[in-house]
Image (cartoon, rainbow, N blue to C red; front, side, top):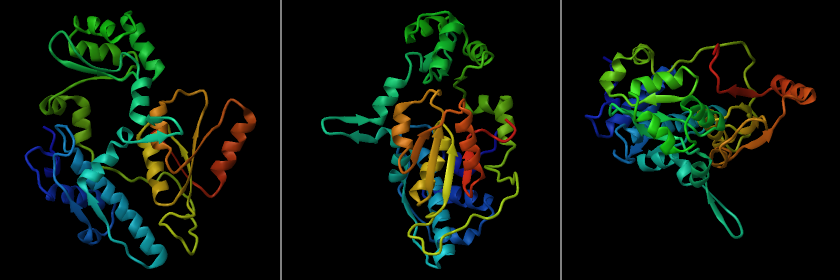
Length: 312
Protein backbone atom coordinates (compact mmCIF):
# COMPACT_ATOMS: atom_id res chain seq x y z
CA UNK A 1 0.00 0.00 0.00
CA UNK A 2 1.06 3.60 -0.60
CA UNK A 3 1.87 5.33 2.68
CA UNK A 4 0.38 8.83 2.50
CA UNK A 5 1.30 11.72 4.79
CA UNK A 6 -1.67 12.66 7.04
CA UNK A 7 -2.35 15.84 5.06
CA UNK A 8 -2.93 13.79 1.88
CA UNK A 9 -5.67 11.65 3.37
CA UNK A 10 -9.38 12.35 2.98
CA UNK A 11 -10.09 11.82 6.69
CA UNK A 12 -8.73 15.19 7.82
CA UNK A 13 -10.15 18.62 7.20
CA UNK A 14 -8.55 21.18 9.46
CA UNK A 15 -5.91 23.88 9.41
CA UNK A 16 -3.16 21.48 10.47
CA UNK A 17 -3.32 19.83 7.03
CA UNK A 18 -1.78 22.82 5.28
CA UNK A 19 0.60 23.46 8.15
CA UNK A 20 1.84 19.86 8.00
CA UNK A 21 2.25 20.03 4.24
CA UNK A 22 4.17 23.31 4.44
CA UNK A 23 6.35 21.87 7.20
CA UNK A 24 7.19 18.85 5.05
CA UNK A 25 7.98 20.94 1.97
CA UNK A 26 10.18 23.30 3.99
CA UNK A 27 12.08 20.52 5.75
CA UNK A 28 12.69 18.67 2.46
CA UNK A 29 14.28 21.87 1.19
CA UNK A 30 16.78 21.74 4.05
CA UNK A 31 15.65 25.09 5.47
CA UNK A 32 15.12 26.19 9.06
CA UNK A 33 11.66 24.97 10.08
CA UNK A 34 11.41 27.61 12.81
CA UNK A 35 10.84 30.20 10.08
CA UNK A 36 7.42 28.84 9.18
CA UNK A 37 5.96 29.43 12.64
CA UNK A 38 4.96 32.98 11.70
CA UNK A 39 3.13 32.02 8.49
CA UNK A 40 -0.62 32.68 8.63
CA UNK A 41 -2.79 30.06 6.85
CA UNK A 42 -6.54 30.67 6.75
CA UNK A 43 -9.50 28.82 5.26
CA UNK A 44 -10.68 25.20 5.14
CA UNK A 45 -11.44 22.48 2.63
CA UNK A 46 -13.36 21.96 0.44
CA UNK A 47 -12.68 24.87 -1.90
CA UNK A 48 -12.72 23.05 -5.26
CA UNK A 49 -14.85 20.09 -6.42
CA UNK A 50 -12.33 17.27 -6.07
CA UNK A 51 -11.73 14.06 -4.14
CA UNK A 52 -8.25 15.43 -3.46
CA UNK A 53 -7.32 18.18 -1.05
CA UNK A 54 -6.47 20.64 -3.78
CA UNK A 55 -6.93 23.57 -1.42
CA UNK A 56 -4.32 22.18 0.96
CA UNK A 57 -1.88 21.58 -1.89
CA UNK A 58 -2.46 25.05 -3.33
CA UNK A 59 -2.18 26.82 0.00
CA UNK A 60 0.93 25.00 1.24
CA UNK A 61 2.90 25.28 -2.00
CA UNK A 62 2.06 28.95 -2.53
CA UNK A 63 2.94 29.62 1.11
CA UNK A 64 6.29 27.87 0.62
CA UNK A 65 6.99 29.98 -2.46
CA UNK A 66 6.05 33.20 -0.68
CA UNK A 67 8.10 32.25 2.36
CA UNK A 68 11.14 31.55 0.17
CA UNK A 69 10.72 34.97 -1.46
CA UNK A 70 10.49 36.62 1.96
CA UNK A 71 13.69 34.88 3.06
CA UNK A 72 15.51 36.13 -0.05
CA UNK A 73 14.18 39.61 0.72
CA UNK A 74 15.49 39.35 4.29
CA UNK A 75 18.88 38.19 3.00
CA UNK A 76 19.11 41.10 0.57
CA UNK A 77 17.71 43.92 2.70
CA UNK A 78 17.79 42.78 6.32
CA UNK A 79 14.04 43.42 6.51
CA UNK A 80 11.36 40.81 7.20
CA UNK A 81 7.94 40.35 5.64
CA UNK A 82 4.75 38.72 6.86
CA UNK A 83 3.41 35.74 4.88
CA UNK A 84 -0.33 35.08 4.90
CA UNK A 85 -2.18 32.78 2.47
CA UNK A 86 -5.93 32.20 2.32
CA UNK A 87 -6.93 28.77 1.00
CA UNK A 88 -9.65 30.09 -1.30
CA UNK A 89 -7.28 32.66 -2.81
CA UNK A 90 -4.66 29.95 -3.29
CA UNK A 91 -7.18 27.67 -5.00
CA UNK A 92 -8.11 30.47 -7.39
CA UNK A 93 -4.41 30.79 -8.17
CA UNK A 94 -4.28 27.07 -8.95
CA UNK A 95 -7.14 27.50 -11.45
CA UNK A 96 -5.98 30.86 -12.73
CA UNK A 97 -6.73 29.96 -16.35
CA UNK A 98 -10.43 29.89 -15.39
CA UNK A 99 -10.31 33.50 -14.21
CA UNK A 100 -7.93 35.12 -16.70
CA UNK A 101 -9.40 37.49 -19.29
CA UNK A 102 -7.93 39.76 -21.92
CA UNK A 103 -10.13 42.84 -22.26
CA UNK A 104 -9.98 44.73 -25.55
CA UNK A 105 -11.85 47.77 -26.84
CA UNK A 106 -14.87 45.74 -27.91
CA UNK A 107 -14.27 42.25 -26.60
CA UNK A 108 -13.41 40.08 -23.61
CA UNK A 109 -11.50 36.86 -24.22
CA UNK A 110 -11.15 34.37 -21.38
CA UNK A 111 -8.24 31.96 -21.18
CA UNK A 112 -10.56 29.08 -20.29
CA UNK A 113 -12.66 29.59 -23.44
CA UNK A 114 -9.50 29.62 -25.55
CA UNK A 115 -8.37 26.37 -23.92
CA UNK A 116 -11.77 24.82 -24.65
CA UNK A 117 -11.56 25.95 -28.26
CA UNK A 118 -7.99 24.68 -28.59
CA UNK A 119 -8.83 21.32 -27.06
CA UNK A 120 -9.63 18.76 -29.69
CA UNK A 121 -12.90 16.91 -29.95
CA UNK A 122 -11.31 13.74 -28.57
CA UNK A 123 -9.91 15.26 -25.37
CA UNK A 124 -11.67 14.16 -22.22
CA UNK A 125 -12.99 11.24 -20.16
CA UNK A 126 -14.56 8.07 -21.55
CA UNK A 127 -16.40 5.11 -20.05
CA UNK A 128 -15.06 1.86 -21.47
CA UNK A 129 -16.87 -1.40 -22.09
CA UNK A 130 -16.08 -2.83 -18.65
CA UNK A 131 -17.30 0.27 -16.80
CA UNK A 132 -13.81 1.66 -16.21
CA UNK A 133 -12.95 5.23 -17.13
CA UNK A 134 -10.14 6.47 -19.36
CA UNK A 135 -8.77 9.98 -19.76
CA UNK A 136 -7.35 10.95 -23.14
CA UNK A 137 -5.22 14.05 -23.42
CA UNK A 138 -5.85 15.53 -26.85
CA UNK A 139 -5.06 19.24 -26.55
CA UNK A 140 -2.31 19.08 -29.15
CA UNK A 141 -2.86 18.08 -32.81
CA UNK A 142 -0.31 15.24 -32.64
CA UNK A 143 -2.24 13.68 -29.77
CA UNK A 144 -5.65 14.20 -31.35
CA UNK A 145 -4.73 12.74 -34.71
CA UNK A 146 -2.66 10.02 -33.07
CA UNK A 147 -5.76 8.75 -31.24
CA UNK A 148 -7.89 8.99 -34.37
CA UNK A 149 -5.30 7.07 -36.39
CA UNK A 150 -4.82 4.46 -33.66
CA UNK A 151 -8.57 3.77 -33.47
CA UNK A 152 -9.24 4.39 -37.17
CA UNK A 153 -12.36 6.29 -36.17
CA UNK A 154 -14.19 9.53 -36.86
CA UNK A 155 -12.44 12.63 -35.45
CA UNK A 156 -15.16 13.16 -32.85
CA UNK A 157 -15.82 12.26 -29.24
CA UNK A 158 -18.56 9.88 -30.40
CA UNK A 159 -16.17 8.17 -32.79
CA UNK A 160 -13.70 7.53 -29.99
CA UNK A 161 -16.48 6.50 -27.58
CA UNK A 162 -17.80 3.89 -30.04
CA UNK A 163 -14.39 2.22 -30.07
CA UNK A 164 -13.84 2.39 -26.31
CA UNK A 165 -17.29 0.96 -25.59
CA UNK A 166 -15.95 -2.32 -26.97
CA UNK A 167 -12.66 -2.30 -25.03
CA UNK A 168 -11.71 -2.76 -21.40
CA UNK A 169 -10.15 0.29 -19.82
CA UNK A 170 -6.90 -1.60 -19.20
CA UNK A 171 -6.62 -2.71 -22.82
CA UNK A 172 -7.43 0.81 -24.03
CA UNK A 173 -4.74 2.35 -21.83
CA UNK A 174 -2.13 -0.16 -22.99
CA UNK A 175 -3.14 0.20 -26.64
CA UNK A 176 -2.73 3.98 -26.63
CA UNK A 177 0.33 4.29 -24.40
CA UNK A 178 2.17 1.64 -26.44
CA UNK A 179 1.78 4.10 -29.34
CA UNK A 180 3.20 6.98 -27.33
CA UNK A 181 -0.18 8.63 -26.76
CA UNK A 182 -1.11 10.24 -23.42
CA UNK A 183 -3.98 8.26 -21.92
CA UNK A 184 -4.58 6.87 -18.45
CA UNK A 185 -7.23 4.81 -16.73
CA UNK A 186 -8.86 6.13 -13.57
CA UNK A 187 -7.68 4.07 -10.60
CA UNK A 188 -8.73 3.76 -6.99
CA UNK A 189 -6.08 4.33 -4.33
CA UNK A 190 -5.74 0.56 -3.85
CA UNK A 191 -5.38 -0.01 -7.60
CA UNK A 192 -2.73 2.70 -7.83
CA UNK A 193 -0.92 1.15 -4.85
CA UNK A 194 -0.51 -2.10 -6.78
CA UNK A 195 0.56 -0.44 -10.03
CA UNK A 196 4.34 -0.48 -10.74
CA UNK A 197 4.42 3.29 -11.10
CA UNK A 198 2.45 3.74 -7.89
CA UNK A 199 4.93 1.54 -6.04
CA UNK A 200 7.87 3.41 -7.56
CA UNK A 201 6.47 6.82 -6.59
CA UNK A 202 5.61 5.70 -3.05
CA UNK A 203 9.28 4.89 -2.47
CA UNK A 204 10.38 8.41 -3.40
CA UNK A 205 10.51 11.48 -1.15
CA UNK A 206 8.08 14.34 -1.66
CA UNK A 207 10.71 16.13 -3.72
CA UNK A 208 14.43 16.02 -4.40
CA UNK A 209 17.03 18.75 -4.84
CA UNK A 210 20.04 17.51 -6.77
CA UNK A 211 23.10 19.47 -7.80
CA UNK A 212 23.78 18.79 -11.48
CA UNK A 213 26.75 21.10 -12.07
CA UNK A 214 28.96 23.87 -10.76
CA UNK A 215 28.22 27.56 -11.22
CA UNK A 216 29.01 30.84 -9.52
CA UNK A 217 26.27 32.29 -7.31
CA UNK A 218 23.93 34.73 -9.01
CA UNK A 219 24.74 38.39 -8.42
CA UNK A 220 22.17 40.48 -6.54
CA UNK A 221 21.81 44.24 -6.98
CA UNK A 222 22.28 46.14 -3.72
CA UNK A 223 19.03 48.13 -3.53
CA UNK A 224 16.15 45.91 -4.70
CA UNK A 225 12.50 46.90 -4.66
CA UNK A 226 11.33 43.27 -4.91
CA UNK A 227 12.82 39.96 -3.69
CA UNK A 228 14.07 38.74 -7.09
CA UNK A 229 14.74 42.10 -8.73
CA UNK A 230 17.81 41.92 -10.96
CA UNK A 231 17.61 38.15 -11.41
CA UNK A 232 17.57 37.22 -15.11
CA UNK A 233 15.79 34.00 -16.05
CA UNK A 234 15.82 32.12 -19.35
CA UNK A 235 12.78 29.86 -19.50
CA UNK A 236 12.76 26.97 -21.99
CA UNK A 237 9.45 25.32 -21.17
CA UNK A 238 6.07 24.76 -22.78
CA UNK A 239 3.19 23.36 -20.73
CA UNK A 240 1.86 24.26 -17.26
CA UNK A 241 4.46 23.20 -14.67
CA UNK A 242 7.45 24.83 -16.36
CA UNK A 243 5.72 28.10 -17.32
CA UNK A 244 4.22 28.29 -13.81
CA UNK A 245 7.74 28.34 -12.36
CA UNK A 246 8.63 31.29 -14.57
CA UNK A 247 5.42 33.11 -13.71
CA UNK A 248 6.12 32.64 -10.00
CA UNK A 249 9.65 33.99 -10.38
CA UNK A 250 8.28 36.97 -12.33
CA UNK A 251 5.70 37.62 -9.59
CA UNK A 252 8.57 38.17 -7.17
CA UNK A 253 10.47 40.52 -9.49
CA UNK A 254 12.63 38.33 -11.74
CA UNK A 255 13.16 39.33 -15.37
CA UNK A 256 11.89 36.24 -17.24
CA UNK A 257 12.48 35.63 -20.96
CA UNK A 258 10.21 32.78 -22.11
CA UNK A 259 11.44 31.20 -25.34
CA UNK A 260 9.55 28.83 -27.64
CA UNK A 261 10.05 27.55 -31.16
CA UNK A 262 7.46 28.91 -33.64
CA UNK A 263 7.13 25.43 -35.16
CA UNK A 264 5.71 24.00 -31.93
CA UNK A 265 1.99 23.84 -31.29
CA UNK A 266 0.71 25.95 -28.40
CA UNK A 267 -2.52 26.27 -26.44
CA UNK A 268 -3.41 29.95 -26.68
CA UNK A 269 -5.41 29.99 -23.45
CA UNK A 270 -2.44 28.72 -21.47
CA UNK A 271 -0.17 31.29 -23.10
CA UNK A 272 -2.60 34.03 -22.01
CA UNK A 273 -2.42 32.84 -18.42
CA UNK A 274 1.18 31.66 -18.09
CA UNK A 275 2.84 34.60 -19.89
CA UNK A 276 1.86 37.12 -17.22
CA UNK A 277 4.88 39.07 -16.01
CA UNK A 278 7.23 37.55 -18.61
CA UNK A 279 8.73 38.46 -21.97
CA UNK A 280 7.56 35.71 -24.36
CA UNK A 281 9.51 35.27 -27.60
CA UNK A 282 9.97 32.81 -30.45
CA UNK A 283 13.31 31.48 -31.65
CA UNK A 284 13.50 29.37 -34.80
CA UNK A 285 16.27 26.95 -33.89
CA UNK A 286 16.41 25.69 -37.48
CA UNK A 287 18.17 28.97 -38.24
CA UNK A 288 21.88 28.65 -37.39
CA UNK A 289 22.19 32.33 -36.45
CA UNK A 290 19.26 32.05 -34.07
CA UNK A 291 20.74 28.90 -32.58
CA UNK A 292 23.99 30.74 -31.90
CA UNK A 293 21.96 33.50 -30.24
CA UNK A 294 20.42 30.96 -27.87
CA UNK A 295 23.85 29.56 -27.00
CA UNK A 296 24.99 33.12 -26.27
CA UNK A 297 22.04 33.63 -23.93
CA UNK A 298 22.85 30.39 -22.13
CA UNK A 299 26.39 31.61 -21.52
CA UNK A 300 25.23 34.86 -19.91
CA UNK A 301 24.88 35.29 -16.16
CA UNK A 302 21.33 34.04 -16.22
CA UNK A 303 19.34 31.43 -14.35
CA UNK A 304 17.90 29.01 -16.91
CA UNK A 305 15.61 26.00 -16.67
CA UNK A 306 13.73 23.57 -18.89
CA UNK A 307 10.83 21.19 -18.32
CA UNK A 308 12.60 17.95 -19.27
CA UNK A 309 14.10 15.92 -16.44
CA UNK A 310 17.84 15.38 -16.35
CA UNK A 311 18.63 12.19 -18.28
CA UNK A 312 15.14 11.86 -19.76
